[in-house]
Image (cartoon, rainbow, N blue to C red; front, side):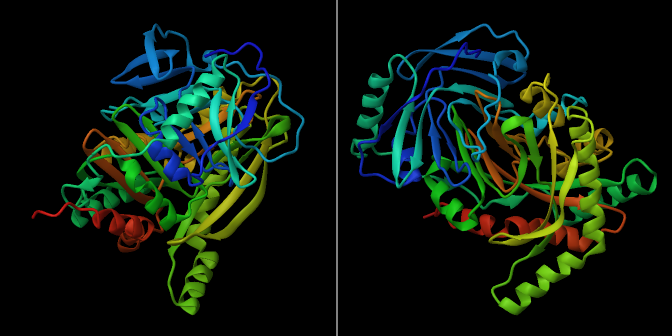
Length: 455
């Protein structure tokens, strides 16, 4: 995936009446490597990467594009960081958005396996593509960007796909059964109590214990993306399709933003309270979270962990906690959020830093490696993409990667969604169990409206 010297990417206004990202994604759904990024309020749609890597069933494969939507499998042997060739960082102070580079995701399983031995979920564990062709929404219109030799041909093919009528009969997305928790309440409480025993024994200070919600489905998850994004208004919304695997992010959490001049920022979430329709009750919930000593203690543990993770690759003295215990309100919940910034050392490859910091401390626990071992023991199934990261790097090393919470993964006919929270010695079992549902009940309820009728 190495790129020698990036030429100026040409920009062409898209000749179409469609303005919705969702409508465009539906029209382009058969293109290889289809991806959507909400991307700092600048929606971006990528497709047809020049090359891409994918890891599935422990086998790393590399594919190169041979013609429009056609790829060949070639040998892949190098470490991931060696596939990327970043140019020197630009000096622009503009907000980071995608402008050509590398888009992909790393699952929790892949990231955790860097440190512990565990089984990965039966689906792609990571994907990374080199995207020089993409659509971007700017100034109330979509623009086509490409620096490929066959850009004009790609543009025409894309326009033909976008403007074609969709009379082809396809199976609409639906659930063949209700989406339900894999654990009973008693099983969750048993796992919670085991976490408490580990904490009392001194193995850990905090464990992010999560539970899975599953269902069998038919059709494409993309069909329902617009409804889920409208429900959540997630700042790190995204979509990625790789063959028979789909990943739909409704995440509120930033993992790492790689800014210009080697600046980096992370914003961990720890601490949650539900939203309410009644304004007074909603404010009380927000105030309760703001004053919660338990949530503040939990949050600062993760801040310290992430400060340590960043310091390995940061210039000495550059790691700073710029915001602590801020309350951010999302559609379904209030969250406690902190912010840490740093400056990367000049010799550090941004991908190297990203991979070493994954999985994020906010969704593992402290100390991190022991927390991952306990999670692997207790949760009963690999998380897959959940609690991994989806995002991008521009060719200059700037970029943005989320934490894949409030996210749905679908492989073949199996749908999976998870929810959980940080467990400390001060945690209450009933409250932690309820927090799982506070976080995803609205998404779960919406999903279950799409259950196929038995008639």
